[in-house]
Image 1 (cartoon, rainbow, N blue to C red):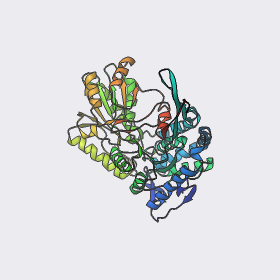
Image 2: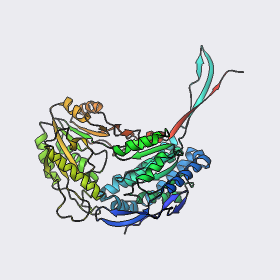
Image 3: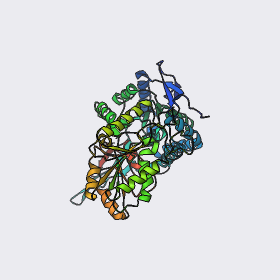
Image 4: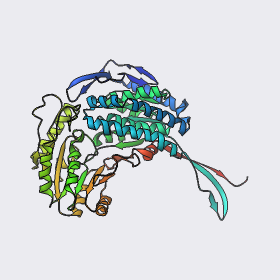
Length: 492
């Protein structure tokens, strides 16, 4: 049986039910059964959390600790997280609907690696104080100075439902490492993994007020983005909501990090190895039932390989097992809620109305009468102007578009409002790299890429896929501000 965390708000180092009487029911998307109920934070609750974070920043020890002292607590948190790894995996499966394989790898395993890396490598090696080059004129030294990197202040961290632990820690890790104090508001669909982080922070000895967790709806998030006591807003979600967050934060000229949507392209050139590319193409729209912003949902394939690729995709999709996420045989689990399934089905219908053809799937699995399941769906005869080629579906829907040459492939790939991820396949790595250089997107894999989501590479998008970067030293930098201090070398 899955062990649940405390189902209360975590404010100023205390667990509380808050000031309201309403609750949010957390549902298992594979069974539609309730898991738990958490408080619906009121505006007063959110403002109390912000006030606690403000006091902890202005008066508390956390921003004034040395990087080494903060690193020691983050590593202690990493150790506790690791000790509860199996618990995190089980919780992720029932809360987010992840398959066991995905929960063990990307949802939990890689997340813990990145968080530990922040405490063990990134924070200890970051220069928070670096000397300026002396100011010299006509051979005479006139002055010198230092550049200080200091915590930006109170950070509001607002996350999405698809990768709860991953997104929560990818924001909290660098924010805490920088010396910021925080208020975390997870998605109301998946609040439990955030609350478990609160338990771990408390056990690790994080000072009170440094991490506050409020569970709530859109109003709770807006209270954070508009609060004059907040200095930084880091948000992950859709581009439509991201624009609202950006606008709300603008009143206070807050620093903003936005990790938004994607409609990423996977380019299969005429010399590509289809055998190697096939599983990556399928993963590009079936991983987590297509609920990931960086998935490669547009497959652009050279016209000479188009028919072969589509035929092999149809055969391979027939063996994709859809069902209970806890079953090791399951390849694809459910969507998060019925509203999301209805949106996906509406876009599938739109694709057909616009003239695209369903080569596989398109409906609901006949053997699953409970849970928010849909079939993996593959479209062909797709034009890049169609909605299914331009809108982020956030469901297991992939499109295949042929191209004549490299130039057309790059043009189609870049003909998008988004620019988050991408892929290039070619037997000639130099050719693939040349093509990758032409893509207007923030993260590109060549022939499947290197280590999955390396902590050493920044993650973020071009265009409407976002602002700023996450992960590693670049993610840390988003929560730091620079101060220049100079002095004169001359007497008098």
